[in-house]
Length: 84
Image (cartoon, rainbow, N blue to C red; front, side, top):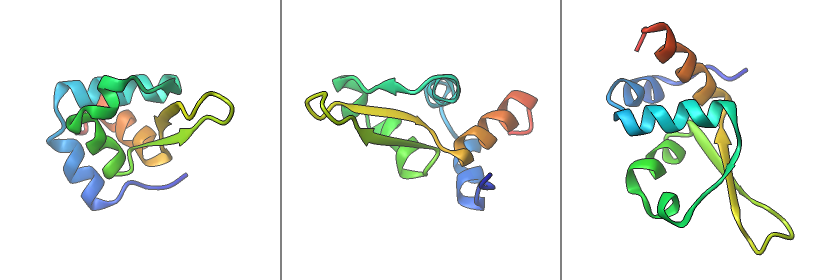
């Protein structure tokens, strides 16, 4: 499992409630991204900091699916423990 980088940990410390909630959900489930999620800069920050990743689903007209990365799972565990 990949350990979170210092940059990812620093970002996690200032994540919004929305970002923390979405990351916690992505740890539990890979989901299709809605148009509003794709357009949401706040949520794209999770991908930019490599706490979440998205992939194109073949055969589903290019729909994006996203889920937590290993680093995102580790950050989410730290948040749950109150370490961040």
